[in-house]
Length: 384
Image 1 (cartoon, rainbow, N blue to C red):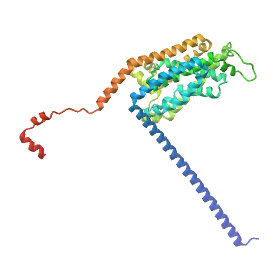
Image 2 (cartoon, helix red, strand yellow):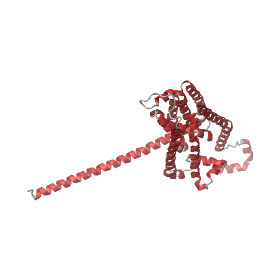
Image 3 (tube, helix red, strand yellow):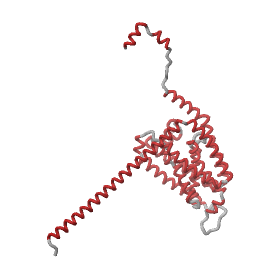
Image 4 (cartoon, one colour):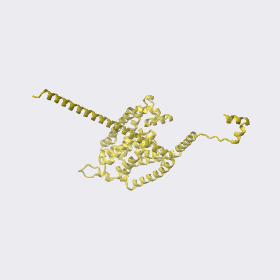
């Protein structure tokens, strides 16, 4: 049997071992907490650096606005001409131009919008839909059902928003070019796939089945309405719920603290109230406190109506071609209206603001000043 001394030594050893383990655990948890705190600080610092760089770039762009507008006009005209050439010569490559455009210009738009406090615009439905387009074209090009959902988005709400919200094709404004192309290019891409790209169609048939010469289930109206109307509406509802959760619940206090931060609802309601147009009167049918709800309902009705129109557009080449001409004509017409009517007023307002900010210098005639001072007052002025 063990002696009392051995038992005491064993207890001391256990106690010391337990203490060391406990100390190691405390040290480990402390190191983990310190690491988390360090990573959190680094994340905050990185975010601040990115925000500062975005503001710096945007300020430099504003300082050289005229030169940038000239360069933008040149590149815009050349780019649009090059796109038209590719559309006629190699329509199967138009989708790759669209993907390249989206990957380059949407991040640049985020930088500019972050400086202007417009970054919540990038949560709008058009960016949600364009992200789905990008995923479909790059990763799931053979998924026919996903293609039909994307077709419905592109030739439904996005295409009609180009017309209803009067997007303007103005080559000296990068912001307006990107706005037009985000709504216009997807429809042109899916038009080329639907009617001008038999290779894409042949690659979309299920494995193990012979290639087909036309889209399947065209005669099956239930299939067409399911994937061109009902499923896109479900995807739209998912976006609307996410948008409401992020903007009107999670970021509500942020928006209330800073009225300069813009969202689509704020911008549209501001313009509608100023113009007192039909949208403002419609949104006030349930009272001022329910204008956001009415805006959501009006947008939902607009989406349902425009999505339903994609079914006859999908089935008719003549109607689809006419719709492409209508979209391009509307954006060009709005661009001409902006250049001839809106832009001159903006230039006048900018020049007026510049003159108001500059100090007014009144020229002083030295001879008049000397004559106005009496000889006896000279000594008083010097003494004072």
